[in-house]
Length: 200
Image (tube, rainbow, N blue to C red; front, side, top):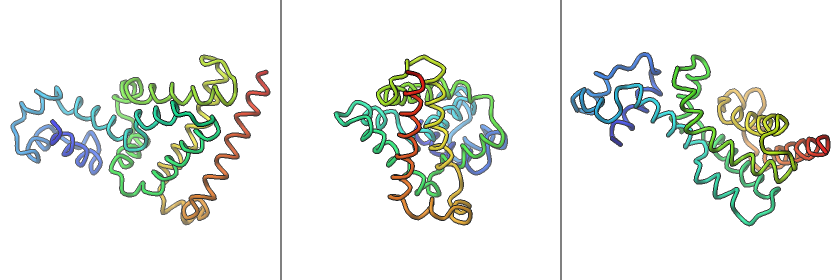
């Protein structure tokens, strides 16, 4: 099973979901096609597993839970979260999962809804706990949803925006990790506190 996931992520990252066949996966794994169906029900099931693993490369639920449940202040938790995101962004060129997500952005597959339910939503819930502690916003309010988006989307953009382009267009976002961290932290804390004040 692990071997099939490893081969699947390499093939999907290189060619995309549509261009990869069960025959090709089985041939690279040196197994018969029924083995792929036995473990994953076909390439669709394998791709769903690969999507989840790709998202773990950026930030695992275990890492996020460790940050949120720590004894640190909400502001310090946000700093540690952003440190993790920036570190991932600085090493994005080495992550196969980034290539898969860039393909998904260009041409979304039909498996994204299940992937969001399985991998993204639990992390979003954890992130909302942190945002609630900073803003005081009700957990299920529209304002909380918007606040979560305003934290998560810049982080995703930083990771997915190719480093070579960032170096050319916005070089200060590519080389100075500490400066970027301080600016993102100040920007997000200022915005989140303002949202909390507006709601109150």
